[in-house]
Image 1 (spheres, rainbow over the protein chains, first blue to last red):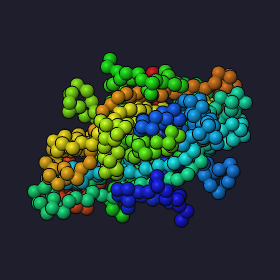
Image 2 (image 1 turned 90 degrees about the vertical axis):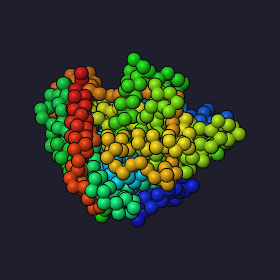
Image 3 (image 1 turned 60 degrees about the horizontal axis):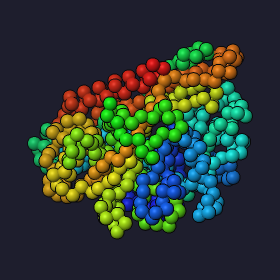
Length: 260
Length: 260
């Protein structure tokens, strides 16, 4: 089992039994959501030595083989404010290699877990935290690879079924960050509620308070034609993806609503 | 319209037309998800003057009237590693009032937006970023208020329908942070795809590439009885909530799949 190294940053604190460094799990959670929250410190904000607010931006994220080493993975980011991020990635006297330290997070909610007492309530979830270093991608070839990776992350096979290749002007206007992964960890809670033993011995409480799990998943609806659409009904690769993902996601949430 | 102040931190950059400081919108997005990503800097990590990785934790979050001023709101946080956060909230020589600067983020995915070219692809979403200061709650009364607020945020009316009040030992073991909101902003993208004008003039492209939106929402399934459940079928306040939320969320995603 390939794992990410356990670092000071990714070392589990509370609920350590829920933590994992398994690359397959980390990657599967990252790939389940197109959006990651990207937290970083603008270099100027840390110069006083006191703690300040990190900045956070939601961005489109796609896992991709590293252009320098196909056996390892990088994360390409695309989204608002890339010009601002690009400036932050620039080399500075205190950081001559450039590269902005970023912390990426994504959480999938899988269920509401209702026990007898509020204290024992919980949620089923899968979350991932990635520590990495972001660099602005400047090579047109790599920008194109990243655009393809992000487009196919939105809808599988979409790249080949859209107007490609991008024009030189589109490539120039697309701001992409490449995040080299330094460490990553996943946290997962799955299964049914676990009430306090004393509550379970109280017949009045057990007979009155319903306990169980309400499963939750991200559901996709029927594709809605755009006002400019001139290609008829949504094609099979879109409809099939919607059907398959819905079944898979619903299946995960329902299976994990009970202890395995 | 009540708004949050525009600060250096919340000032919109790119896509400024998508930004809003409207309290009603900010609160509605915050209340749509039980989980927020909490980013912060451990005080020691910023002492060298160079940018470092922020820490990020997913935590349960519930908006609640401020205990000091019922006309304003605070956010109560509960989740893993509260002991670590509690230590970080302690007063230090450089921060004698205590309180940890935190940046909260939550994003709801509402749709995949497919245009003719990959460059014009997008997602419909609602995101919110909150800048605040977190304090450990120490008063048993306020811990109880926060527990009630978080429990009813999971499932409306759940508090009164569970085993309450919490025992003194449960209250003592529950770590709650109160976040005073210093600034907040929302970002929203809604509507159909907008392709490039040149692509729209190309009949071959328009006739070949399907464009439109795949709506997405968080769907809840049938409540699943826990193995320890002794109270029969899931009660009406749970089933009604599931039905109502599903209809509301699906409705939002589908309505916003086309330009309004």
